[in-house]
Image: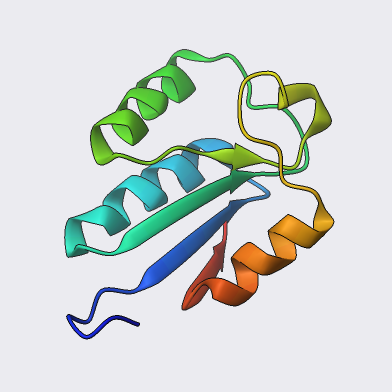
Length: 95
């Protein structure tokens, strides 16, 4: 945690990608540094997810992924990089 109280938060999008995007964007309101990692499967191409991607852009969040099929679209994290991101975060949320 920084001297200003800003925390590093990591949202793991494991079960509900749309909700994880909303949670991550919402956490930026408090001035925290927020990361988002898509996991388990590619993000579905739906109008709701498209709107949430715009919300992430407005929030300044650049998602990452552990899903091989998404490696061409987003930065890919292998197991070691994911472990580093999780240990460097003050708080890890699984959505």
